[in-house]
Length: 266
Length: 288
View 1 (cartoon, each protein chain N blue to C red):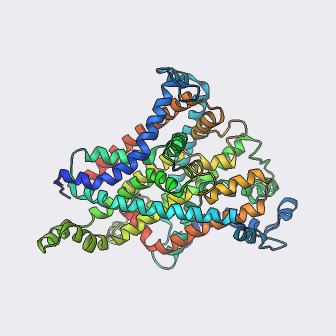
View 2: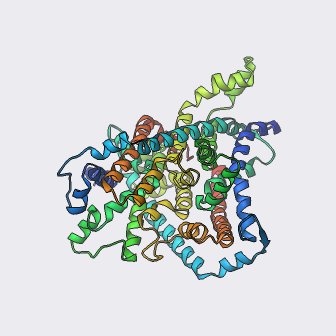
View 3: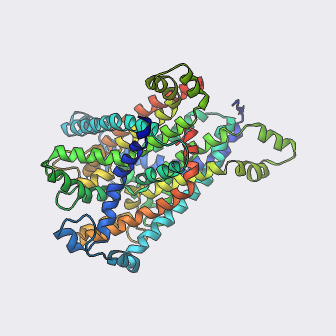
């Protein structure tokens, strides 16, 4: 029994990789091969699909737009969440519990509910079709998440650390930036990872709030599919490339992930 | 931790409060605005009171969508939670296998949701997809764009593929926090595998499992993009879950009043269930 334990994760990982393999497989095929024959690997191996994406600006600007607003959102979320999480982890104040739950409710709001009002609201303040609009709208679910994770990490830092620093004559802000933030870098890393992840995979709001100038890659994909017929090879290549940023990020934080989850937040 | 009372802490919370309120309260009030009024465009509104709510609450279309949604969420929880625990129990605890498992298993979580839908679409199509082709080759009459049973099967399989890893990661983190001494003590007592699971591992995972169930409930109840890209809610209305039906009503038919009322009812359901869960979770936390 114990000997075959490794079989379970192995089978699961094979199941996870199959659709991804199929997408990669398609991305190296020509469209005619995809439509006319069923093959387990590309018979006429081609890089044309990828070439098209890297040379056609309507395609590659989609990636740049996505990365731009995702990074912007990650920084806004973490920067705003740091002091708030500190307040929640260290102090009692009027309405703190209600405020915390209210923040979490925004993580629970179905984006489909908010799509239309968001469109009207951001149009009325002249932010429609800007990266800032998408970055700000993603704060709706990323800030509550960031506060939640960071609060968990901060609560595991003993309060004596703060008190000793004050006794040593540190001012609050000097303590916060010089001592406190360095002790929770792992937590900040995890938080940034999750903000990046949820902003990267979200499409409904990003698509609703953009038209041309800030259109995310994922929206470029759906629109091309519906206007110029079904270019499956191209679509598969674009899809495969959307996996890359996530894979890079996850490689860097692989050691922190289990630790981040262990604190029971996220 | 014993916290000190300090009302000035509000200043630290203000940036978060402003940013979230900016995004949450104004759009939510817009929805409330539509839910109680009739509009003919040009910013002209007529008061309708609770008419839309009454209309939605008795409409068969809403009942059908809600029924499909509840069934889908239940199936997802029943499959993903035990499966996730089972995989986590069998994961390696040390060595090179750990980062490999973690990185590969996290992959589905980081793929944009519409790409997940598109990927499963070409994976499951009967003529060009691996899954569809294989199922037909071994004798099943499988076509998810035509038969509603197949569409359900594909949507559920896709969601299991997409989100089980989250449960695995959470359970794995919970398991890692168990001291080896517990296992040694159990071995000395001659405990069975089931007893170890029931009395050592499960209690330690209780907290992370509550979070896993909460997250999986919220996200599967709000699911939109993946089934929209995969099946478009079809065939017919077979996989038109609440969000899909809502967007169809709001943007497709421009029935803003009923759509807004439905949004509020929808939000209220999610909120109630999460509130119950949240309180249970906090009670557990204060106990331990």
